[in-house]
View 1 (cartoon, rainbow, N blue to C red):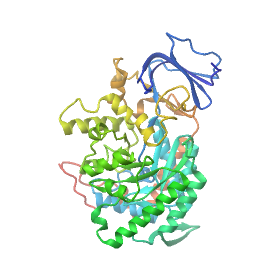
View 2 (cartoon, one colour):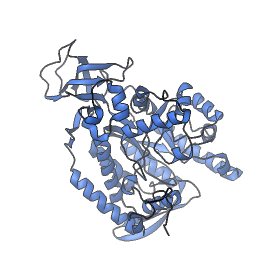
View 3 (cartoon, rainbow, N blue to C red):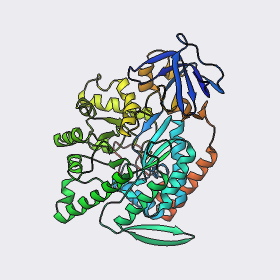
View 4 (spheres, rainbow, N blue to C red):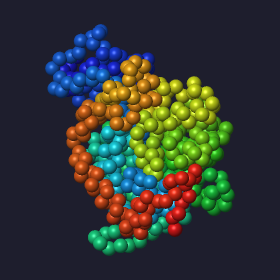
Length: 483
């Protein structure tokens, strides 16, 4: 074996390989950005001469966690509009489309990447906006700000860009050198900006900062008018032509009740597609997924999972690939994928009234190897195997809530949380060790995020949304008192 750059020793290694091996007293050797070797010290002595050695005593080493669905911007609008979906949509529209600048998107990306890193999330897919399909592809400066920040983070990221929902043109507000102007943006312009961002930032293999395409979800009621149907079909054809030409992934946010079958009919689905939320699916939706090989993104902590249910066990039993994602950090969530795993297990067990559903090992697969498969990166990431990328997370199991030792798979899935992540390595580079981020100015990230949040809400005239609303106390149901 060649001399490794980094040698991890004395850990319990949860490989998620084909045999799902859990190796006690294990070592992992890393050379460059790849895993050079894995073995138990009881069977094979570790190689000598490593540049850096990490002691994993009392820790579980596992693949970096993968979050396949989130929204840029949400990190700076946490809790705004809490409990009131209409108000939440107004906040997204106001801040994202009317109050944000490239500095806002850069500050939010830096904050999000810091939160993800400290939670052991090494790979993430993020839409450039959210709410009611507010995607800031009116100017490449917004995507540039996000991608620049994520590249600095060292994490493996994929940004989803594309058009808003018709009717076009759509209005965006820009703040250029102190001047304020409203810009009307066409579908063609948003698609051109998306192509520009993909051309300049994308790495198809996901080795660094990647970019993919998205477009809004439609259902039959939204396109009952033949003219609307033709318009959506034309949008889909244009997006798919660009996707095929550039060879990128495609994602959509908010599928439910027949919309997946409709997306298939519009030619939007294939092995390249990741479909968010996907609640209350029909038999036709199941057939469309089996026909096309598209993957489902389950967001168990999201508001949409309150309104409907993503039938994860049924999808898995039908041979359809599923992964778990965060849906970002607002209005009431975060990037703690351990939390989302636990939420998913309880969510489906409550539905079936059966605690045997979604076992701990399967839950972990949904944020590692199955998520890698959804991204088309299962040969690169998602498990700890020789030749794969060295995306490795060490979870400190020497905690009261993780003791006594034993059964590491169950303890990780049910009891661990983001704060238990001790060390994070991405592409063979140690980014966090002993919970200290080694390459980012965390104080500056936090202070800049707070400042940019205040400025964006002030520009949008939504300062009151940053105040704690009344109605939390003594009530069994929150009632919005927003004007």
